[in-house]
Image (cartoon, rainbow, N blue to C red):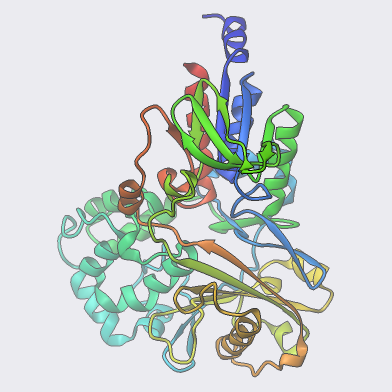
Length: 459
């Protein structure tokens, strides 16, 4: 087939993309760029999903993801393609801390991977885990390299090779803060490809961590965008407009199959005295780009119970925060006294560009799991809780009078992969993209969505 023939065939195809998060935007853009006529439907009133923006205290801030993993260069290459490569910035090198017990806070060790230490004798590791914990970890990690190498979860691998102290005091707070799940529910091959093979090769998990780290490019493991990661979603939305993608917001899907989607509500759906008139859209392919299973797009049925993640953002004036007393933020270990947040990001310490725009003010973002904070928690209660937790985590008594503004954002907690599969019974032929099938993180989501789009065009 010639390239001209391929382009001609693609131009006659029609695709329906259900879901306007990053995965849906990426797959829609690539299909449209190949000549496919694309309609994208999104249940909410905005595109971007967990990569969005809100304004707090007059500052445009990320409402969801605020960084991306640099490993593999996937996101960097995509940002270059979108013309955003020059806006990529690295976080402040001071790094984050971890909180234990009643006010026990320690800088995170520098040689780790997902919190797994690469050097169990390092002072910063012993400070967090304790002498007894590191001694036990060293004893366990002296076993043969195949011991534990068949463990598929991060939690299982660390528990077998280094014990509960390393798991509870280092790995769990980092995994919880970054991936919003317990390490027992996170696939090690998704977040640390090659680590289990390195364990067999190197003979210890600590050596395997150092080996995997040595293969990674020099520099920070994460990066962001000047102006916020929401710029990525905004650039993709502009691309869809340029490519002529039809976008339906407020579009609620009642039925979908491999060739059609039926909408019961949309900005463009007609209404009569009985309510919205169902509208059937037909295409050659239907792509489902939702993160937590099909249930929430089929007739409004709830998806598998996933819980809720609440982000509380505070903008405040306190000169004592200029010194960044806990670096770029704090991750909270299970059982830490007097703290309900699972993590705090000192955003104006982490991102110099934001500190410049904040003009002396500070931005703190705290994250909460349900049922600690639920949809029934009032804004005032959340604001008070966030300020109290920030005071404990930063080692400062913060005055409510210094808070200029506060905001909340709620996201569905990610499901374990097994639960996602169990909750999603899709008609044959419906294609899936998004974090539920690609894995968490922008790199995985973008790479998978692009592979799917390329495969669909090649058909």
